[in-house]
Image (cartoon, rainbow, N blue to C red; front, side, top):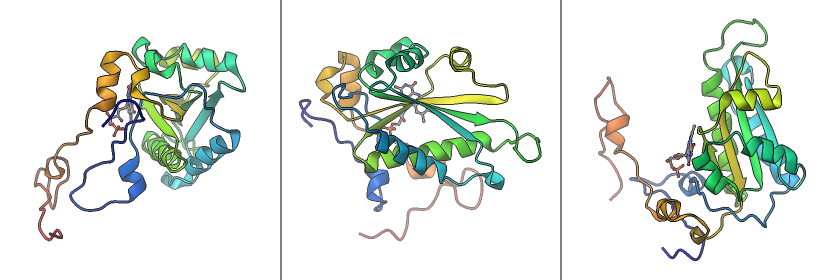
Length: 211
Ligand SMILES: Cc1cc2nc3c(=O)[nH]c(=O)nc-3n(C[C@H](O)[C@H](O)[C@H](O)COP(=O)(O)O)c2cc1C
C-alpha cells in the first residue's frame, strides 16, 4: 500500500459481508481543503435518526461543528479533544459529538439502553459517511466536562463520543507514529474468541463455509 494516496483497509472476512461494512474504517489523515457539504451532514444525521432504539425513545442527541460555517464553534469543540487526538483532527473539517440521554422521555425512568442505542445511531452515521465517500473517526479521547460546560449540555445527558469527519488524504500528512498506524493492517480477534454458540465461552463453529 503506497503512502502517497489514501489508505484502503477493507476488512478481511471468513465469508462475504456487505461491502459498505467491510469498507468502513477509522482513518486519521483528512484533507483540510475539502469541506463536507451541509447536504452531506444532513444525510449523516438522517442515517443516525433511523437507528432502532428501545421503546423507540431516540435517546441520542448530536451536535455538529462545521469549520466552514462556524470556525469559532469548531475551535471550541476541538479544544475539548485530548492532545493526541488534536494532532490529527486538526485537518478534519467537520466535528460531531454524540450524546446519550439517561431517562426515557415518556416515563422519566432510567433508560439503561440509551448508550447502546446512541452507539447504534453512530454506527449508522459512520456507515453513511463511508457510503458518501467520507472518512469518519469516532473518539472517546476528549474532556467530557469541558464539552458539557462549553456547549450547555443539560444534566441527564452524557457525551459519548466525538467524531471527526472529512475526506481522506495521504498518510504522508500525519506525524510518523500516526502514519505508521494509518498504514498498518486492520486486525480483529478470531470470530470464536468473541462469538459463542449455545453457551458462554463456546466458540462459534466455523463449518459449512463455502470453499
Ligand atoms: C467509542 C470509540 C472511541 C474511540 N476513541 C478513539 C480515540 O480517542 N482516538 C482514536 O484515535 N481512535 C479512537 N477510536 C477508534 C478505534 O481505535 C477504532 O475504531 C478501532 O481501532 C478499530 O479500527 P477501525 O474503526 O479502523 O476498524 C474510538 C472508537 C470508538 C468506537
